[in-house]
Amino acid sequence: MGTVLPFPTALGEGQVGFERAELNRIVDLYGRMVAAGLWKDYAIEFRPDAASFWAFRRAAERPEYRIEKRPALRGRQGQWALIGEAGQVLKRGHELGPILAPIERRLLKVVNG
Image 1 (cartoon, rainbow, N blue to C red):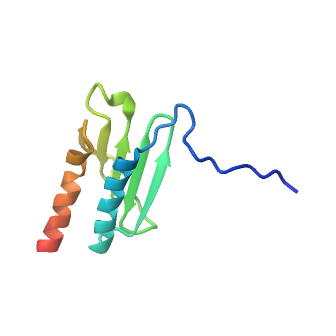
Image 2: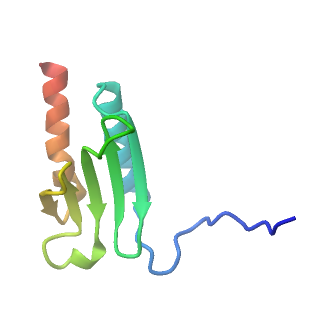
């Protein structure tokens, strides 16, 4: 038989991840977008230089939005970025709230419209 390895419970040294409050805020927005029928699937990616949350309209296509955290850019233009479907940076900043604001505004238009 093969060797059984324990599932990693924490990110490795030098690995970028989301803090609990950050992930709660992103997943809350994701849940509201799913309830509105706009998003159907998501993916989370952790790399040594960045952590990304990908939101998909359908599972078989490119992500509509990518919310990315790059701590190396903290002192420059900000560690948070909202990236569009074609890979363009839509918004960049130091705080998560303003980065999520364009998506939240779109959600308000759907609910009120």
